[in-house]
Image (cartoon, rainbow, N blue to C red; front, side):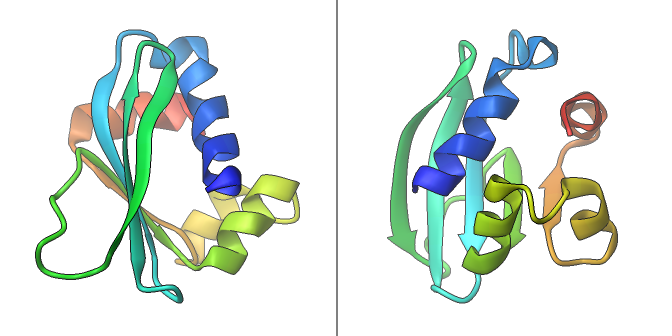
Length: 105
């Protein structure tokens, strides 16, 4: 949770994220957990983990990765662009959100 708060907090604090109010999810494939939250008012709120499964609500912005990749992103051993390009990190969102997020990432 600390690693995810770090990444998402940096994203939320970026001026390009001003005005965004979106639900977020991060599926951690090796832990079979999904962390849900909300990006709103320049911060990330209500982060909580739930077991992965069919009942997990679909968020507006969805990340998928392993917990090791999440930690590597947080401590700077892995950059988002190359991780996304190689398929280690997946990002799904609507076209408008993707265009806005590319400025942030």
